[in-house]
Amino acid sequence: MLHKIISHTLPYFPPQLIWRFSKSYIAGETTRDAINASKALNRENIMVTLDILGKFVKTMPQAAENRDAYLALIRTIEAAGIDGNCSLKPTMFGLMIDKKTCFEYMRELTAEAASHGNFVRIDMEDSPCVDGAIDIFRRLKQEFPRNIGLVLQAYLKRTLSDLESMLDLRRDDAALNFRLVKGIYVEPAAIAYKDYHEINAHFLEDLEFMFKNNVYAAIATHDTPLIQGALALIDKYQVPKDKYEFQMLYGVTPKKRRELVQNGHRMRVYVPFGEEWFGYSTRRLKENPAMVKHIIKALFSK
Ligand code: FDA
Image (cartoon, rainbow, N blue to C red):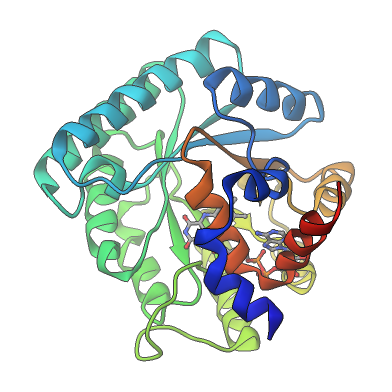
């Protein structure tokens, strides 16, 4: 009950309090902070994907600013010798305002990453964005076969058929590359599974489909039963170590992350950073109400 009340009132909490909780989940406010965090992770044999926390975009000039910020970030990743890439949210480049320009901006970013032999991944946002994200992925995959990946959400009932429908994009020299996640947004029951066990079962069904069809899988979860289920599938299909990776969020379950790395699995951490950390933090807290207890702790500790 207390968790529920706090979840609803989170947006009104003083930023200093949220920051005390958030600082372990966000690399910092600046690119330099993100690069330092990335270097530390790289030293632990962990790759990164960087995400600039952004405000909700209302105009195309804001989308152009985001494009410029990511262009600079891609160049900095290269200059700093980071083993990592960027994750891009289509709405940050104006997906819901001007699809054509959004595609052009995301194409520029993919072209920049490709010019350094690097990669960008399209994050998946809420359900009204899914068709648009898949369409952008399709077009970019044809032009930059080795430099673009997409996220798929196991809670969406459409995901397995989306996977099937994209198999035509496979090429012998450039596998399809999908990050599989449970899904973070609140979606209607008509289009999304709601039950924990049902979501997990579909996650593993999608993953099995990916392994059977030689799709590179980025297995993004901190959930122990899912990690175990993924390891069992890797074993069943004898998937080589360079055909999949695990992914986790910055600051979340570092012990599980270390165990996987020690056992020789590739690992990538999603590193969010930027001045807009407040919205990101409150979303994370709402998503995982158990974490609200840390807020309560922070309220009473010095
Ligand atoms: P689950 O939510 O069941 O969590 C399992 C356990 O992990 C929890 O009990 C807790 O111990 C720990 N945990 C999980 N989340 C935590 C958190 N925030 N803080 C602290 N502990 C936490 N979603 C989406 O819709 N589109 C996207 O593009 C992405 N991208 C993405 C990238 C990466 C690298 C990851 C890891 C996740 C995403 N997600 C995402 C989010 C994803 O959909 C999902 O909401 C979270 O990963 C939480 O789900 P789990 O699979 O970890 O399981």
